[in-house]
Amino acid sequence: MIIRTLEDVGGTEREVNAPTWSSRRMILADDAVGFSLHDTIMRAGTETMMWYKHHIEAVYCIEGEGEIEDLGTGAVHRLRPGTLYLLNAHDRHRVRPRTDLRMICVFNPPCTGRETHDEDGAYPLMK
Image 1: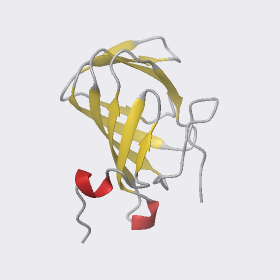
Image 2: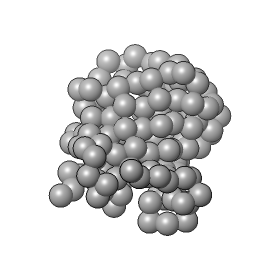
Image 3: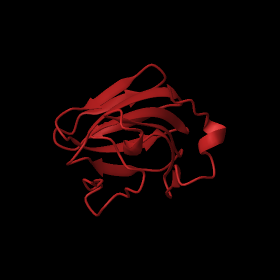
């Protein structure tokens, strides 16, 4: 059994910060459970383009409001507590938080914790 709190993760290598977001990686590849789970804050008034070419990501909004744009179709969807989006087709997308958004994110294959977004907005597939 693994037990972790946000306090355990904060300020360690499991907390990753970028200009538009902060991610606390609660479960990573080295936990050997087949997925990773991240508690992520996306900052109000920012915009982040992402494209997970190598990962499937499910995102569940638990706090805040904003929108996600599907860059393939141009469709824009509202994000608010209780909203889930699943990037099941490696969808290129842009997230625009109106307020700080707190999201619970699940990645498959699991992230190692060392990933950073590349020029396409993707995480590389790390072994």
